[in-house]
Length: 527
Image (cartoon, rainbow, N blue to C red):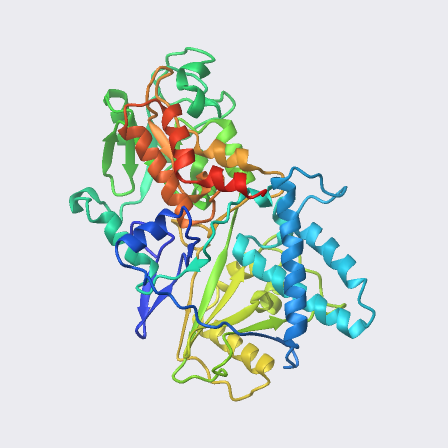
């Protein structure tokens, strides 16, 4: 994927008269969702939307299907366990001692639940279903394991009512009405940013309260400098280009860095192709994955330490999709999805925890067991989801190898040796993409909504500046709607409103917080 599109996480490609969603899959919710309102306004959603029945079957490795009553029983119990986890944030409960993650809490609930099942065989079967649902949850949340997700913060995500909505013409179709009023000459594509120079006329530390208290209230010191020192004295900024290797002789002050000393603009954006853009204000929408990789060298002066720490604290996981296209239907017409209940052998080598360098062999042997199901997109198109390190490993494989493995899986779980090979396999690779470096944001153990708010805090060029020089937007900057397209949209709209109106930042933020309904919905969630 190249930088030839406007929204990095919204990619629809045509395939056999269908639109494959390589990125965002649904509009999440209706009430208060600006993406739904925009889609309705431009006729992208049918007013009469009759949902199709979705029949799910669960099968074990030996091809036996689980009775639906058991599947329904475990699913209802699992949803109850998950809602209980959300209540710690919503109701300010204290969790059991030494339980810090969602995974730990759910596994504790599962253990207590299974203790009430006498038959060992029935207990084992139910445990397999719980394990499958936890794998599914990692794809929803955007993580490798639910053990990574902070228990006290799970409920911070606000779920809008109305279910998930699919755009028949593809999610990318929503970009056209967004861009119609933008002159084409104002949209620059295929132009990666090398460095963002933000001018600082006086040295001061604008902390997390700057957005609401005003920059003039956050002055700690006045110190005229050359605009190339960090907000924090312990951080050293070196002029090394981001995204490419250079020799020692090439590590010198760039042309953009020279121009910033004489430029009257607050911000100078330097691009890899040598282009330079001067601006009074910049809204930075780089994904959290890119910030994790480049934040310490991308900005000159460097970002404040509190912002760097929050970027490091949050999780930006990998969630990938596997599309399998066939010449003819082979799955029973009444089945919409098949859940894969993988066995966990007692003598199976435990999963390493040190990343790809140390667990290469384990991933080679087990990566495909993270695929929790295959669902129908159409009668001849199946979709599988995979997350975490297994997804990252899959990205290193050819599509042919992935297709062969998926064929083996389907033949095994369907107990049908005649399942055909797909004529085409399309896999996403969000971790490998240099302009995403992952999929979406989650709150890791030890992190909180405060970290999201910290990343969203703007940068000021002067302690008495009325509007910030650099603002931050994207799904990772919305404390209630992180991981969603509408969260990204709302954060960008808020930043634009602050820059376009004469009101103070505090007044605009208060207006935005009520207009996107997130605070109101969180308030009624306790009823």
